[in-house]
Image (cartoon, rainbow, N blue to C red; front, top):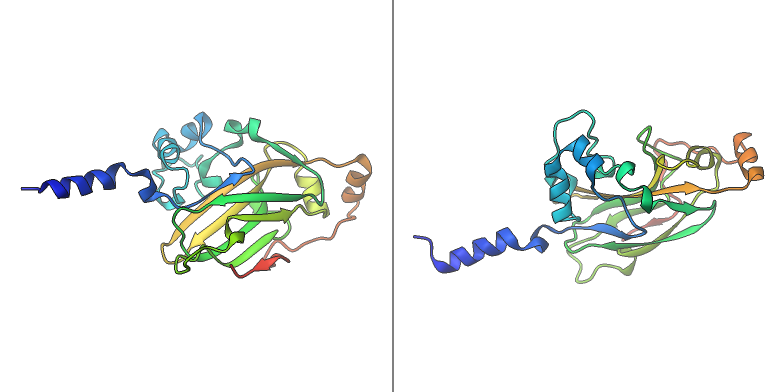
Amino acid sequence: MIQPSALVLLAVSLFTPAASAHGEITSPPARLPGPAMAQACGQQAVNAVLADSTMPIESVPFSSSSSCNSFLCRGALFADNASLLQRFTPGQTIPFKASIPIPHEGPCNVSVVNTQTNSVVGQPLLVFDSYADERLARLPANNTAFSVTLPTDGEVLKECGAPGVCVLQWFWFGEGARQTYESCVDFVVEVSTGVQEGAAQGGGEKLNKCGRVGKRRQRR
């Protein structure tokens, strides 16, 4: 016979949302699940993320459809998030806020990602070699409040001018837990005609997309 205390523990484990919480970006507004994601990745995946917005990718019950790219913005699509589009200018500094209810130590970065090609544009804007270390009594302040500066190089200017193409992607991998977390902020770069012409002529520095790390590197 199951003892009453055991039933209470079972109920707590089943109905306490914080038990599965991990981390997400809360500002600027990041992509949310919606009907387009449900069509691509299944309603179960949408329901799971709506129930726990900090859920790691590995825990989301994605469908096996080839139209679902779970490791790009955790399956969230621009079609559901056009109203959240941010407008930035080259060189603008953008403050971020993150919520990390349950930390898992591992690397983290913020990068510009072209969602049409699923590739990083330029180099990461911010890199943490060690992030969200659960062994610390308190997480460093810059784990939950940090900023990135939008590049002024030609690649970003040329690729990120149309809505639905580029995102600022927060990517964190908890090494011990083997869990991946992503939040994506849709944005466009608004530049003057003169700057656009300069970028088209190759005026910006060309950055290697493979193997280069961000200039702003932090340990934690």
